[in-house]
Image (cartoon, rainbow, N blue to C red; front, side, top):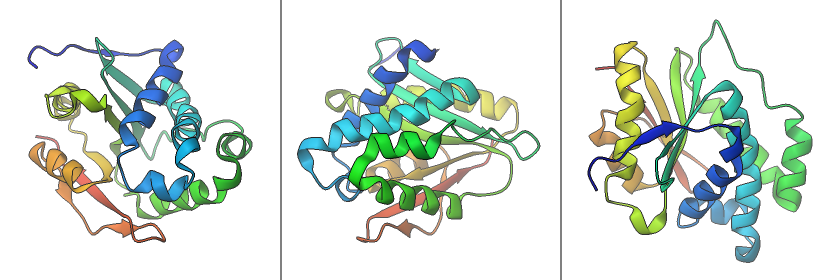
Length: 196
């Protein structure tokens, strides 16, 4: 796919973005640990992702391809101007995740413990419609924001959740760091990109 357009999305698209992320992430190992019940997994993920996407609409940047086949959710992580936490996060997380809330809290704590301190933009989610993966959609989304990061001398950071993800991000200048793991051994690879 060439000539893939990318645009910033507004709050009216929060649910759609959350559902796109949930659908794309079902093939990953981490969601199986987070929500062991396969029948409920996608719905629970979409509910939890919607909390974060909605927050990014207000305090971050949410981009989508013009056909909405791919989405990217970025949070500026700037020490001098930190974003507030999502309002009523604990209550909303419990409502979204039910009996698996403790697992999502554990994941949040892992992410926080491994998050770097220098100013950067954090790619919280990059998701592409499963039947369109491998066709340049993710690359178009990355290039779109990397242009801004490079022009403004801002590093990028993410946690890759698969070896395929590590390979994709490495092609875009991210350096992989030592992984951290969920209790079942599922790894996340922190990755850092210096501006070009």
